[in-house]
Image (cartoon, rainbow, N blue to C red; front, side, top):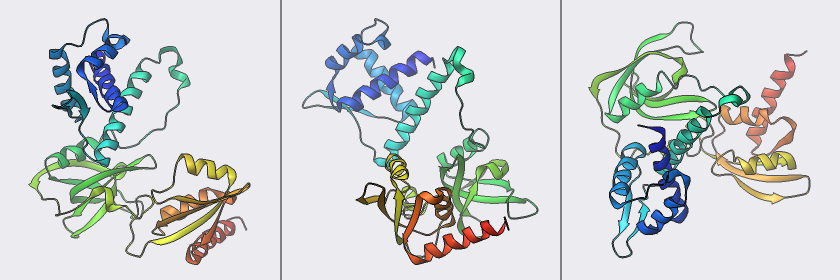
Length: 298
């Protein structure tokens, strides 16, 4: 599939997202005025072919309102919308980078380990609900663990690393594995059924990061300086984040989440720009980590 065709698909999706609903005639006029058309009209047959291609490539369905003859993108839910936007961003970014030419050496990207090797294996397994077998190289064990078999429920990207969350057949419980620590991953022949009512988007609902907890989600209140507050407004730490007070020199943010070590490490990375107002147990955990750090320099 040519790059030009992908660009046309992206243009149609982007235009429909911006306008919400639009007739084919109005879409055709916008198409005519844009360089993506290459001077070719958007005929009915061409549009229908592109619509089918968009569904195949991006899993985006374009439907028509028979009462108004307006076309729109079918809503598949928040999670599917995020996935569509992620894919569109990825394709668009790939196109820009491939055409960077002379400035290629001036574009510095962050590496995402494991995605090229193990992620396709996991996605293929999830498509057909098949088990996956691999060797796992845990950082907390001296020797690797061969023959790990899981039923992959979903994958998640966090801090430049991909993780798979699935049911460990031997241990009979849901576990999380980092793809960069997996080798010899293969899709098995045994199939499985997803648990009734399982919702991947809610699995980490009250968690920050990739760690889970069996405890109770706590109300967390942080006081951050005005500079850190700007970063948190631009990129919230968690979906529960609320800014409950704004002052000249600081802001107060509240959250509801589990006190996992991932969250503690995130707070430690902010240094003196953040102060825990509550709960007390989070203060104690942070102080303990800070004391251990200071002890390293005694």
